[in-house]
Structures are given as structure tokens and as C-alpha cells.
Amino acid sequence: MNRILILFAHPRFEQSRANRALLKAVEPLPAVTLRDLYELYPDFNIDVEREQERLAAHEILIWQYPLYLYGSPALLKQWLDLVLVYGWAHGPGGEALRGKIVFNAVTTGGARLSYGAGGFNRHPLDAFLLPFTQTAALCNMTALPPFTVQGTYRLTPEQLEREASRYRALLERLIQGDFDIEALRGLEMLNDALRGDGGGETP
Image (cartoon, rainbow, N blue to C red; front, side, top):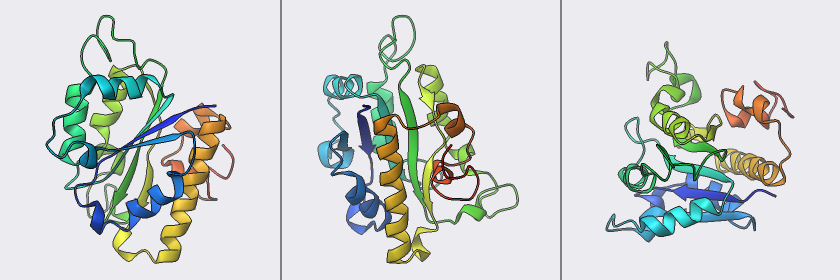
């Protein structure tokens, strides 16, 4: 069984529909540990040793956040800078995260079609996530495509509930080890592992 650590960063969580639905769906899972960074560290004074201990105790890491102006909220960047230090997460002797699985769970106001060369945002979503995927590579982690909920302003409660159910189903499969890692890596988004578009139902 795999244990999952969700590092959640949302400076305006009280106004979030999408992330609230996602967390409500997965927080009860016994193998999931949720770390709400803005709740834990409102002063940005991160307990590095405690965060490293949490990382070491889990096999899968999820960076969950809303995409704000094409980047993550500031506290998550602070966490990356302070916790994933040279000599522990990377560099000589930095083997603590080797082999762990990691991916982004991202919500965006823009719809999926707005990301791409011909879309409003001019670049695919993974272009904006490159600092995370490169960080994963630096730390010898296995990076998966993102799980996304996009066009959040237009989603009905029923659509949000459906996406939250997919998120829970994905995490349940990851916990049980019921997945083909190379098939998942070949998807554009992890959502496609759980619906008929893209990667099919059972990669």
C-alpha cells in the first residue's frame, strides 16, 4: 500500500469551490495525509525538519493548488525552496526522495482548450508546471502528468462532484498500486486515466 502526502496551498481557500470539493472527496482516505500549508504556516515560517519527516514517510507526493497568474501560490514556492535542500533532496548524498512518485493537482479558471499554442494562454498547461517537473527530476522522483480541474468558474456542482470523484478514484488506485506507471506518464493529464478521452479507462 502506498501512502500519499498532499501539500495543499491556497491563500483564499474559503472562496474555493473546486479545491474544497477535491479535498472533501479524498481527505477521509486513511492512507492520505493532508498538509494545508497556509493553515500550518500563516507566517511562512516553515518547520523544515517536520516537513522532511513527512516526506520520508510517504511514497507519493501531490502538490495541490490553484494556478495563479501561471504559477503556484507563494507559500508553496517557499516550501520548495526551504524543504528540498541540497544534500537531502538532491546533490551529493541527497537521496531522500529517490523513487517517490509526484504530481501536481491543479485548478484553473481557464478551460482546458484555452491552454495550447492556439489558445488564450498561448502555451500548454505543462509549460507552466515545468519548474515542478524539473524539481522532481532534480530530486530523482518519478513525475506524473497533472490532475486538473479547469474552467472552474463555469462548472456546475454536479460537474465538480464528478471531478472530485475522479480524484478520489485516482488516489485509491495509487494507494493500492493498481496502475501502470509508464502508461500514466504517457497521458497528457491524469484525468484521462479515469474517463474515455485520451488515455482510456484503465492504463
